Length: 55
Image (cartoon, rainbow, N blue to C red; front, side, top):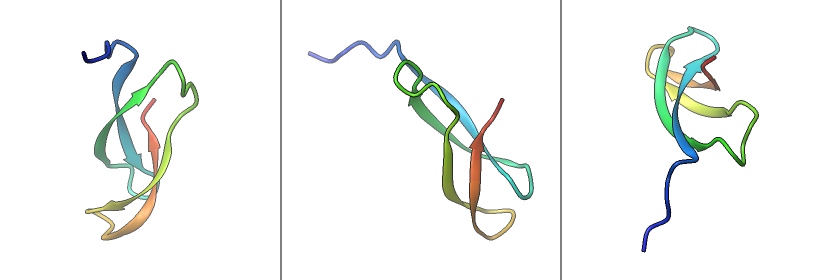
């Protein structure tokens, strides 16, 4: 049987260079309370940049 997904929520990731929102990812808000920082490809910058979780 599947577990309850009430702790997971969608968050937006924003490119630090061009400030455009590019990705929507799910994160467990109970276990990971700090903001996400991931290296992702930005279509606007056309390169891999650091993406932070939106406020």
